[in-house]
Length: 202
View 1 (cartoon, rainbow, N blue to C red):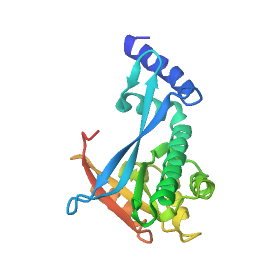
View 2 (view 1 turned 30 degrees about the vertical axis):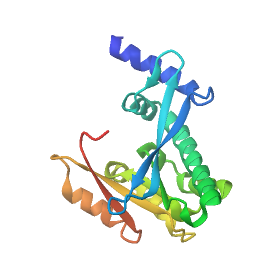
View 3 (view 1 turned 60 degrees about the vertical axis):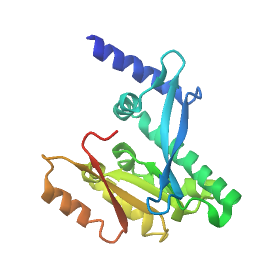
């Protein structure tokens, strides 16, 4: 096993203990209205403070989490944290509370057959308003499986929740545009925002 593979294996093993050991925490990045300067929401960011390594960059540990499957548990932890925070803001600030809180959703989560049920259960558990939650998913995640599109429809149609979706567009020269348009066209009944990032965005 070469050095890089050995390092990845160690990170993978350590990551499985990170959540139960309290090493994972959340930060909130403000979402600001450029016209008024007002903070209108926040994006929750997952961080890992390793006991020996210190802060592990997310672009290092998240791909590892996606490969070993721990991203599913981590993703639900982040979603629950964000919903609790949204409910707390609403209780504390009322009408002045931030209007949205954004959570990134991985392709592995969307592939889970009970993903929509889990989101609804967390909203119920935390008391967060669905209208304040924005789930950010990449086009790549939407294109990955038919299960992803099915789960996105289930999040909205059965209960007619006001939950919002943001499809993150990664600008790549090699992207198959026709396949992209066909897949996103299947989301027509669901209202969603489109966010654009470059292929090298963090």
